[in-house]
Figure: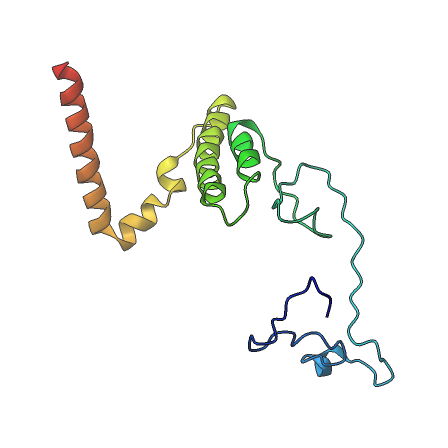
Length: 159
């Protein structure tokens, strides 16, 4: 053991995967007995990044294979870029990603309206299914919404 390495042998199960010949999934891998190398993994060729891929700042680069989602764009894309400046263990990373999702929803609505398509928000959020499977919840939401709108209108008229 090098001086810079710490001894973690007191942790139960530590180093269990150090011996390449001791592979728990050996029968499924169809390894020959003459193969003394164990399970040697070769990295697949790097998939080309044709769009901007945001990845954790804890990784030095992209994984060999990844999904190619819609590249980040607009305000939500800028929020996502901001989020990926922080570690995944940082709450700001996840809160920014949640905010970016909400902003992207409104960007999608604006794109629909710009292209002349009026979205049916009631159907897209599952209104019919909610009415069928949770009618009491739908009634409660409607009552609360009407009450809030009434209070806001009354407050604005008062001014």
